[in-house]
Image (cartoon, rainbow, N blue to C red; front, side, top):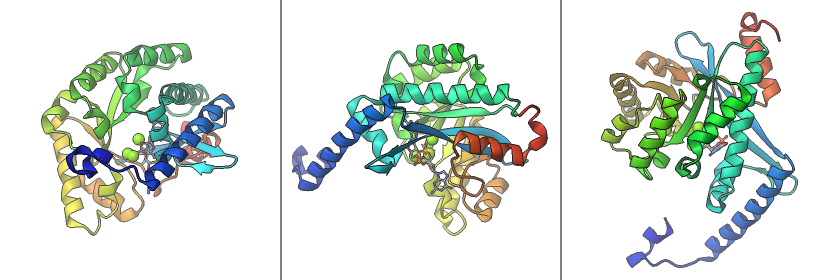
Length: 285
Ligand code: C2E
Ligand code: MG
Ligand code: MG
Ligand code: MG
């Protein structure tokens, strides 16, 4: 990205960039240690059916609290982990943790839900991914239809032919694929047809002002209708208000996720939340 800023492909290495690189390196070192010391946690944000408000899924989101750096946002440490290659180890850990959690919840009698896990484009490019996913599902004993893998639209567009090949392999295994942050990644519509994903996640930047901004409204309506035409499910991210929810529901968006319902929660709190919302569905816990 830096390259594009300079004329003729040149750019200056500014003090600001130098500071950013130093922080990146510090983060990567600390992250490597956090992985070893089990200082990372996965939180789970519930996803809801628009039709009846039932919890139908959970998105696994990585959390990191460092003793000195404090809470580091994944928006900062994921890119650092990607650049350093540490994302492969980190991503495998998140995948295994989330799949185990889904299995534990089901064994405890929670109504079945689909566990959605974010994949970095770096993980997605790795030729071993389909085998790794299969091995983890088998090791844990979770049926593949309870796992959904999220890839951002920009991640999918880095190398569309190879993304199509990997998505097909995962789909053949019975795992669902969704496109995250949809609408922000410049995918051509012809690729969208070839990706054959299960679900589009409408980016929260379009949802934010949906009640007031006619252009965001138009974009969201277009995404939902296109998805319907292509036989894809839709979920809206970042739903914070009843007005947003009502609009999305009226337009036929299938699922909702956002602070209006719940923030991402530690596993124990997710359980309590699910139990309070649909106690009767919990048979054992
Ligand atoms: P994402 O996958 O698009 O996740 C949605 C982000 O929106 C999460 O931020 C979530 O906490 C936040 N969010 C949810 N509901 C609302 C809402 O109503 N309002 C607002 N303003 N925000 C909401 P988070 O957890 O900070 O994660 C940021 C990004 O970091 C994620 O975006 C994802 O791209 C990445 N990420 C997080 N965990 C992982 C991971 O395990 N692996 C990979 N590769 N990426 C991850
Ligand atoms: Mg996501
Ligand atoms: Mg997103
Ligand atoms: Mg995002």
